[in-house]
Amino acid sequence: MDILTINDRPGEHPQSWYAATADAPGPYPAAEGRVKADVCVVGGGYAGLSAALHMASRGLDVVLLEASRVGSGASGRNGGQVSMGQRLEQDELETHVSMDDARMLWDLGAEAVDRVKTILRESGDDCDWRDGVIHANHRARFSHHSQQHVEHMQKVYGYDKIRYLDRDEVRHEVGSEDYHSGTLDMGSGHLHPLRYAFAIARLAEAAGARIHELSRVTRIETKGKPRIHTDKAVVEADHLILALNGYHNNLDHDVAHHVMPINNFIAVTEPLPADLAAKLIPNRHAVADSRFVINYYRMSPDNRMIFGGGESYGYKFSADIRAKVRAPMLGVFPELKNTKLDYAWGGTLGITMSRLPHFARLGPSSMSIAGFSGQGVALATLAGQIAAEAVEGQAARFDLMQSLPSPRFPGGPSLRTPLLALAMTWYALRDKI
Ligand SMILES: Cc1cc2nc3c(=O)[nH]c(=O)nc-3n(C[C@H](O)[C@H](O)[C@H](O)COP(=O)(O)OP(=O)(O)OC[C@H]3O[C@@H](n4cnc5c(N)ncnc54)[C@H](O)[C@@H]3O)c2cc1C
Figure 1 (cartoon, rainbow, N blue to C red):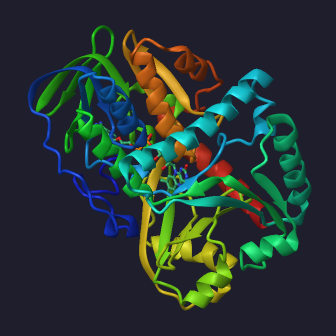
Figure 2 (figure 1 turned 60 degrees about the vertical axis):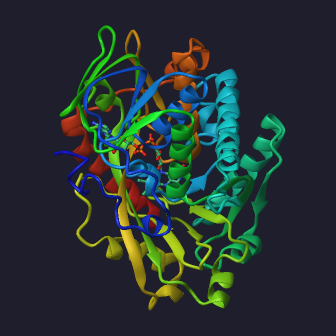
């Protein structure tokens, strides 16, 4: 099983609405021969590109190796939601880590969103950024928790950009009878994810990073000074940053034990009539709902519903992704029954047991950043910067992130998928109750 080829053709972005509406930089040449650099970054998603941008901007000689095209992993295929904080809500985080660490993680999450906005500004492409993410409750019994969450965020973290939505308000914001309450966070937002990946790549290239596509790393040596091998090149660098997230296969065995790949799917409708688009999401915020297998969606600038949902726990994508996404979409918006789906695709993300990112040192000057657990648009961007800081000798934030709980998955890379499938089937069933 090879996650890079089981669902995709190397050198090609999946046929998504994103790929159809973005101009790719490059193509960048494959790496060849013996290459020397201060730093080698492996992986051309947000994490790797952001690390390369940060270091190249500070004058380091950076080589980035990407197996396919930049942004061809999860970074070019995701829901585009840019959320504050971490994957777990703060009150839940506080039960896993100290209050100081919970605050630090909140601050990092806020810095991550700021960093995204700075990159948009510097690149001159706003990537269709819009403020506002709604969390919508599909069960009335979750309303109390949402109210408490808003109060907690205001009182403990001084965060006042989030507010509670009662039944009428949530149904005004989301034209669906599926929801009973929710929250609206105006500090979060959404964007065109592939254009964002391309924006970072262009900035990194302009800062002097040497980007190589179709340069799959087949082996890494991390015990001493890193040596990184592709079929056609060997890179000798003072430092190595692995940024592979869900696409890591088994390049580093230990990372594979902590970060598990799971698939998720998105479908995009044909453009909707303007009055229907205005009825379904009048203020054009992004929405994520309270189901364990989350439905997440938003409206494109040309009035297409971009709807994500339906995980799978084998490595191969479903044969009929349209059908897989259509079912939850019609559960929320039955009026889209006769609407055509113009695009549908899948992507692979990396989750951890704790749902906190997994930062690891693989050797004296080699590290890995992964495990953004479905919230990587902002967090992977910041992770790249934090790894870059560690390369530059300021490792305090990397060390803090590395010290967070990140247990191994039971069963190891081979057994954990059936175990997870079993657990997920139970949770998916629970969503229906
Ligand atoms: C369908 C879907 C929806 C999502 N929705 C959201 C969302 O709305 N909001 C959010 O915050 N997050 C979301 N996520 C998660 C988010 O996309 C990821 O957390 C983020 O993109 C991770 O970035 P990354 O750079 O770590 O990894 P990736 O973007 O996956 O990049 C890893 C790169 O490494 C390359 N690679 C792998 N192996 C090798 C090798 N051996 N040699 C060289 N290169 C290699 C891959 O080709 C790939 O380009 C979603 C993910 C998916 C799949």
